[in-house]
Amino acid sequence: MSSTVPMTPRWWLRAARHIAVRMARALVRPLWNPLRGLAKRSFIHPLALVGPRVRIGRGCVIGRCRLDTMDGGGGRIEIGDCTIIYGGVEVLVHGGRVTIGRNCLITRRATVLTGGHGFQDRDRLIREQPHECSDVRVGDDCWIGYAAILLPGVTVGDGAVVAAGSVVTHEVPPYTVVAGVPARPIGERAATAGPRTSGDRRDAEQP
Ligand SMILES: CC(C)(COP(=O)(O)OP(=O)(O)OC[C@H]1O[C@@H](n2cnc3c(N)ncnc32)[C@H](O)[C@@H]1OP(=O)(O)O)[C@@H](O)C(=O)NCCC(=O)NCCS
Image 1: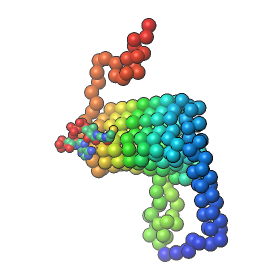
Image 2: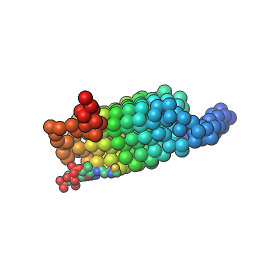
Image 3: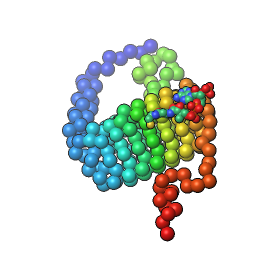
Image 4: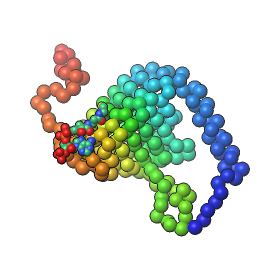
């Protein structure tokens, strides 16, 4: 098994650059976040860690969370209009894309991951094996419960609910409620005859 000591001069240079960029971002963040939010008529918490490759829709509320694309990974995060992301949420993108739809609730401490280390080759250190990434997609009007985890490659269908503490390893069909580790269906959201949201009701009342 190969074992390289990473602390070469090149490693130190990269580490120093990484720290400098992070510190610069931390300094401008309290000003930049509210301005960025204002431009989209959204609220972005001044201390939220929102990376540069993150697109936030209109009317969103972004708490003190971490929506981050790792340097050099080429990943993207897209958040649809009127979605609420609570504090403590982590969306970590090493590569690939995370798409979160409109009108979603992503509750505190929920985590979305798109990648991890390859580990198949047991003759190489895991940390030296390349990252493997897959996109994650969350549809419109989804509720991701407290401390739920969405693993790389999963799709959560429109209107689905992921219960607190669940680990989603497979596709969640639309309007399905899933719970547990691994998350399994425990129910379905029922359809109602009338308008479903206050927004729909408001639209319906307009002449
Ligand atoms: C999913 C949820 C909404 C409940 O949905 P529900 O349709 O009312 O489900 P029920 O309470 O009837 O439970 C149905 C089954 O799922 C199980 N279950 C419910 N939530 C579960 C969870 N988080 N993890 C594992 N199993 C769960 C129940 O034990 C029950 O199992 P049983 O039939 O063997 O007794 C709720 O459990 C939940 O997780 N809410 C998220 C709360 C949250 O994150 N709040 C943050 C503030 S917004």
